[in-house]
Image (cartoon, rainbow, N blue to C red; front, top):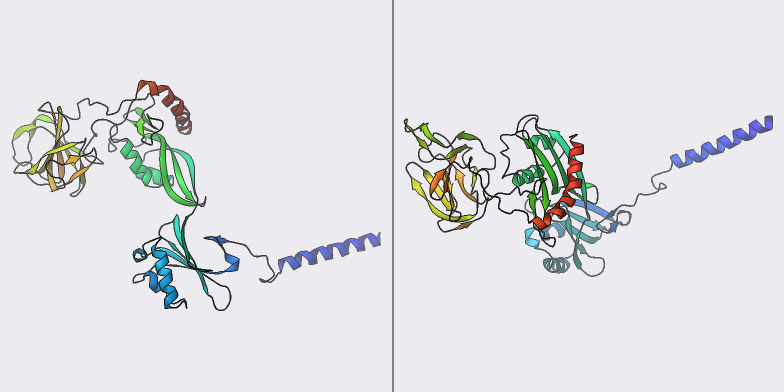
Length: 405
């Protein structure tokens, strides 16, 4: 029995010593973690990361590396064939990859103009310059929530890049006035995001599906290419109806209506009752004004009442006019596309504050644009509806399940 206890004690002591030796390894004895940067193993090189600073040039950042004028000239000439060496930007990253001996001889230079692409100047044999890109992976996720402020704030709470808010407002520009969304309104979005090296977040990639609760109704949006071989996408609701109309809902990205089209309104400047044949949208001076549909600029100019204005003819039926601009950015006869910025909000003419008065003509008669039923610009071809439904239904199920509808 005593022999058994003695043997057990010996085994424990040996085991303890073995573990102690592994824990107390010196830095030289510990296994080294191998990291690869730009195709160079960190254990084999001395790697120095830095950024371009004010006053730096491509030549100045390498001239202190004991290369000699002839070598520097060769490097610059070789690099010039791949990228503009005069165009290195302040704040952009560069890396010196040097030998690990006491001479720290430069073996390669890496310049990163952005987070994905980089240029390698390999000096190990002859001077070799090449461009590479970090691998990009795309990950999809679906979020849902309720508004308790602006859309940007709601998305920010869920850790989503602000670019998604811009994508959503563009997709819904024809069907939702984002100023009219109310606290508690539901939304859900399926979208993809880019990751560099599968770990570094690189922003929103694309919008796959969405819905917003607007005035008690759920408005869905699904991208679809009517031509399966085309990359051009339009957005449709869950019944296949196009969200995009011939006209945008308003000439501003976000709208705040201060005065409607009416046959009799007390004019705040002229102090008398008169018709107001337009819709006023208040916005800070300098806010971009967009043309609500494609067309040709019919008039630009100034009048005492209208201030700086632009009038656009869209076709034989419709024309629009934009008043009180602080600045006109188009000329008469110029072609404009839907959403083109044609001027800036101001308070020129008879105006008490910065706003744009939006006027609308149908067959030469001024009408209320908010009450007019306007045509969709690109209705879905009926033959494409079955293919759309097949693509749409699983996306809709995902949105509805996350939002608990």
